[in-house]
Length: 281
Image (cartoon, rainbow, N blue to C red):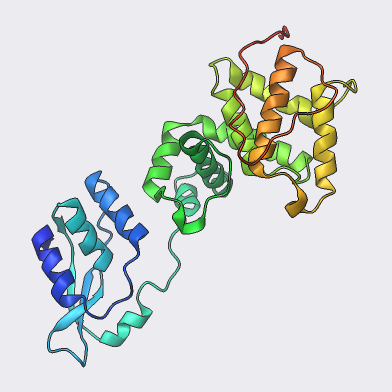
């Protein structure tokens, strides 16, 4: 059945009298998908049932889809089920939603969980200029937007591979998403920089033949110190990111350091240097 914005508006006003509170994020995501022509009809129906306190059937399931039809101003074809036992409402949408990494795994992606995590962090790095864990439901990136982002940035798969290796060698002292953001930030600075990012990660995880004033040596000492700390005592992911990029810049430019720079949780992102003073093969 084709549901028009006007029909959806009437149903919401007259038939949505006994339902859970509308979730603004879910409504906004459906609306965005409809406007982008990415809303997919999965077979879920609009469900109506008779409540004992009302003389007409009320909406049991589908209020967010109807609200999105109103907000988007577009009509959509959906199945409609009537005569549902109203007690069924308490069991509706109580299952676990499909996670993006499960969709990625079905597509044949390896390391799907880590790919989803790093892609979300990298997207926030680009959009918000910060390195942080998202706020749960406040993360506005929908599933299809995240898969589109991954498809548009295939280098994210290399990012996962390199950061996984470094994470294991650092014994978790620096988070996997933080390392992924560092590699991505460096690799995206210039077409020749993915190879430099790879080389830098080898240096910071290997550590052989380093002088005491080598910035990579100082960084490794700092990371080993963090490994001995409990997680709450460690610098934030944003601070760690800024520091590791700053050390990359010093390493790239051939500068020594007597001590590492400090960063706060509000420090601007450290830009990647374009001054490569060290000749490499």
